[in-house]
Length: 369
Image (cartoon, rainbow, N blue to C red):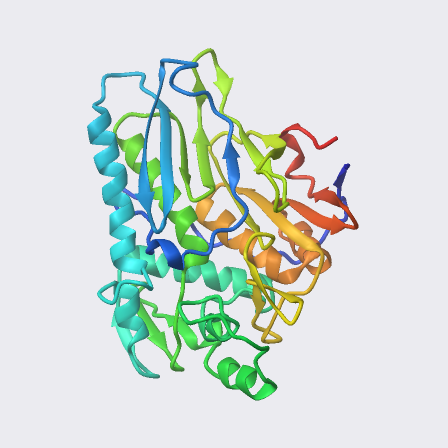
């Protein structure tokens, strides 16, 4: 296997949304276990407590997956205080953004009819603004209102179909989506839907939760840490001995999980998306869980995994999902144009082909053989 750097340059990049640093606890994740769509996982490669006693850790469950925090305390701090802050952060976004809690802020907005308007939290508006940026640069391949199509193809809360949906069913579902019908008011706290939309921010929220947890533990004096939620990661500083935090990108295969490549990115967020573990088959045909809202059909290309490094873990999370929808050719064009640090893994016969943008190269510590 080889790691190829793509060097083509693009023009006309769009401005990234401003990612605000929280002043207080506002972050987290959500969802009950069976409802979560987990993408390609990042294998944690940091030292264990036994290997380096100065590295402390705690973990738990959130949004149907797990989270873990590893940290080095340079000053006295209660582990219980850190964990309480982290879990409160996760619970906060669960309460605001879950599509599996009827009392969440997002679900209250989703129940509004066409033309409905609601005052929502600043962080909910922030994620909608990030989603709009992703929709614009992908020409609509990324769309947080795609839920009706996801459900139709069997990857939402509804049962999986026993046959491929008809053209008529697909068009009916497409009539109920469209990011352009979701508007943010000039006041920065109001959302309006011009169509009867169902908004699902789960493709950004895990990464957003990572950022919020990181902000919380930093506020309590922790400057050297690794935070992971459901495979999305943020790392900062070092372990004892000035050793950098490292994670392994999982080999995209159905066999035993193994890291195919090791990366390190100080004070950055890292997210991976893939479809090789989440699909179903009907009459021998395999259907990916990633739906392209432009066509109404599951993606059908050779891209099996994308890893993105960005200042914002939330944005990295959404970008990785976006690239999976775009595919290797269109996706790489966008990645180069927008100067995004990304690694694409494509299926090439019985092997995999690794292609990265120039911005991703500095983070690679070991490459596939």
